[in-house]
Image (tube, rainbow, N blue to C red; front, side, top):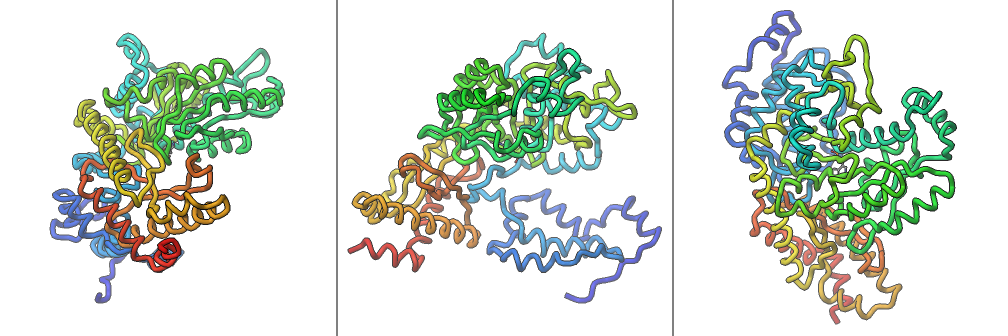
Length: 542
Ligand SMILES: *Cc1c(COP(=O)(O)O)cnc(C)c1O
């Protein structure tokens, strides 16, 4: 590469970047044309297949100095193509089946550009105008999807200045925090002389109500974002209690009831229980109706974390799997997971439209009382018009389109599970309930050895299998053809031993059955070509 042309900081060049678009033949315009006409092709061509080690990549991002001198846009575009784009992750690739986000429909690209160009801020009407009713409509549609209230309900509440049917936010983490924030403030609300926790703080609230602590109960498969929520809300991570699951990764409600009993005997109030509708690791759904009944018994908030699985409600064929979700006081759904919206689209819904009163904030210069500003009911302040992309997907794909996508994902997971079951060298670890499953590679010689082994030997073999699974997963990722993720479970069928498993999420509509066959074959090849594994296996070949 020759020496870079030198740009100069001048009033004129600054004016130019605000007023003159890049020439059609410039580097950035060419990139723009390519991603517009063929995004998949662009990503295939420009993301390097073979992984570069992170410490190598870091060399391009060393300086802590803000550059003094400006740079031509084309030179910058060239640099990021080489240093950034080439070493990003091809999340849209149909053979990358380990991520919760997958391919995007084409039309969201130009719409995203429109959204950025308009640069609306949803915090208040003054900077968002029609975007506010649009966002309220999206919340209304999602509320209707989950709770199915009648027309009069939505007519009354959807655009009401005093309330919000939910909150749009950057993702499931903020959605979960918002839900538990409301649960906390409602539990410890104003009472006689006490002005409520929101006003007087947690210490005064605990003294007033006579609690020694607050607790949130969730299954051991609950998402770590709930732990963050317990921390920021002043509940404490040790009062965020993980309850054991049954063999199918669904929370054991009797154990949850017993835990709640034990906490309450110690003066600790259960503030909320959380049901997971589609766990991040295994895709299983908690028994929501029984949990709703338990929440009622305990007099606590019932939140459902359906960040990943909530989109299943769009399929009339599978929404029954989430039966009981309509009993939840609040629900988290990420549009940027199974609704194929780009990242930055989380949603929390409230059954009771006045729930957000508990967190309402007003300020004089902004968020005036009685305005329809969404910022008075959200944790975040300035927010982009992402709701437009959810709106677009709901309109363009439609419920029926989503139903086909969801059904296809679930059926593909069943197909993949059948492939694994039919292959004597693989073991299905968790059955797919939605489009997510886990499995591991256990060649039959080792399986026979496990059957013969005593307990200590069995634990040793499991530990070796864990190392091999982790190494296979890493090598598959590094070779760049395909990607499955991995996680660690404690399955009952392996005596609750820590077990490293492959985890696949089959949401990408472009993933074919052929690819699934190839991915298993590739994994087998990786195991068989691993000298350490071969040596280990030889022990059992005799
Ligand atoms: C992804 C996920 C979250 C967190 O959502 P983010 O959008 O990553 O903040 C929470 N809960 C579950 C079950 C999830 O799958």
